[in-house]
Length: 226
Image (cartoon, rainbow, N blue to C red; front, top):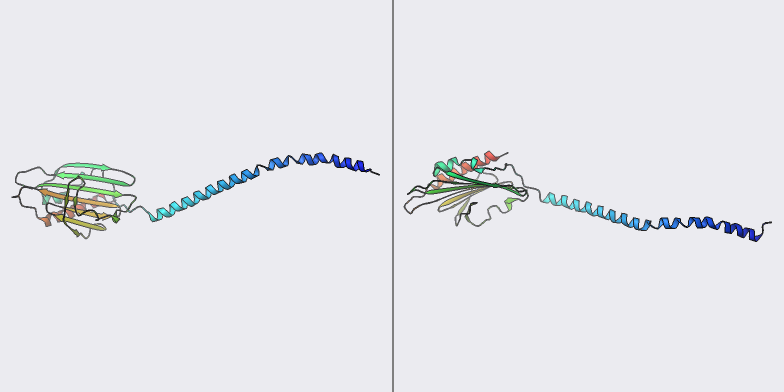
């Protein structure tokens, strides 16, 4: 018969096995922080996905405007043939341009040699390609008058719609000059013709100058169209 001590001995001999299992507990302890790290990683991934989705939605509502024209580094290469015929032979061109992810612009200034007892003419052309914002929101809302790209400005004038040019075209007329602006998608074209002279020098034929400006503007848009 097995005595109670022997049974107790077997029980005691089985204790090391239980003790050997005790190291299992420390191995499982790091699972708590690891789970927290995984939750943090999952949260960051989820936040990134939500942010990316928000950007996609934002891009849908702020789509880049349509641009059907190329950028011109030398805008003076496009001659103002009709305006020269209606006013004076325009010479002395000066060109400038700039490129930016949001806006490309080009500018050209034409002058005419001074002649005594005759009008002096200045013509300026500018093209702006808006690549990120819609210029149609502010088109035609600038102060009334002629504000040319080269710095000359005059107040007052009458503004008329011009059909057949781009999406919208405005002709601003005043004493001593006129400006033609055209909006087509993300492109804004501007042609300004100004003149000055003595009191005894008659002004040019406004209708002829305006017709020439429209003709040259149409030729400019055609030459830059992609």
